[in-house]
Image (cartoon, rainbow, N blue to C red; front, side, top):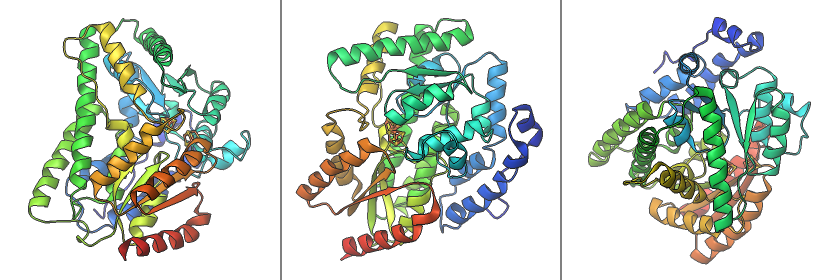
Length: 429
Ligand code: SF4
Ligand code: SF4
């Protein structure tokens, strides 16, 4: 796809009150980065074209869809976490949009206000808003924040000055009383969304929304189990990309396209048409999410000759491993089931969080990986400390393990490359 080019629309960005002079440099930079990392891969599945198009239209077509939705009175909510009951936004006819927080470009903007020694995802996202460098941020009704970690929850107080920020309290334990608290928070969130539309969400709307998001999660489960095949029919880079696009695409369209890709991968598996030979070292990645456009570690690992076969992450299985059974449930019961589903998310902000350790080991075994790389964004204390337990569990299971802590800057790429290459050599012996 040599004519790939991320599209620009300066008029649209002006209307959104962005820093157009600065932002107009972004599409060419993204075009080059994307071409180097994704389009240079050999033998990509043909159905990846749709996802390439989503990146081409990331600053134009999808933004227009968001503005059209708002014009039609539908809620458009920006999010930073998988701990957002997006079924409620969907039920109100709205759009749930994961906001960008994976770029180094806006970290210096954020550091003019925020401390330097906090998570790069928080700095990147905050920087995008205060610098007027993100059309998504400019097109939302409000931002949904959560109290998962300290860096986020204190930043919401500052972000609220720039964009309305609705904060939900996420419990840190999973007892019955914590679940009741979360249910109340879900109900408050529902009211905040209904305030935008002026209509109460009906039972049928909620059921249809749950079905839509179940179908989306199931399509991703299907895709992830197909990529576990050895040899892999799709690269880890492409899988990461799809899982990132899941956070801002229309869920129905996205589900159809993922299923079409799955059909193609099934055919490729039958024909033994792989992206890498069977003997290619297979690596699973676990840990903190990789928000768009954070492709750093995947690029290093696959550029070093391995293939990534699973992501245990919020931009990965944590987003789609659980669905909601609605069979005959009333609206109130559905909200409870929805609450239970979200309480299964094993974010390291919970204590204890041993379910996550078990989940990582189970996914490792299912994926046919030969080594685990645990990825932690710099200054993320909860994932960093949880890596201790994960290492112990891997040692017990005889799983080769490596922990990596990094940010978005290119400075440590050489050093990471050396460590990753040594790890790949170790697991290939
Ligand atoms: S790691 Fe935790 S805080 Fe981060 S997106 Fe996932 S659930 Fe949210
Ligand atoms: S990666 Fe860690 S520090 Fe960063 S936002 Fe997520 S939970 Fe917070």
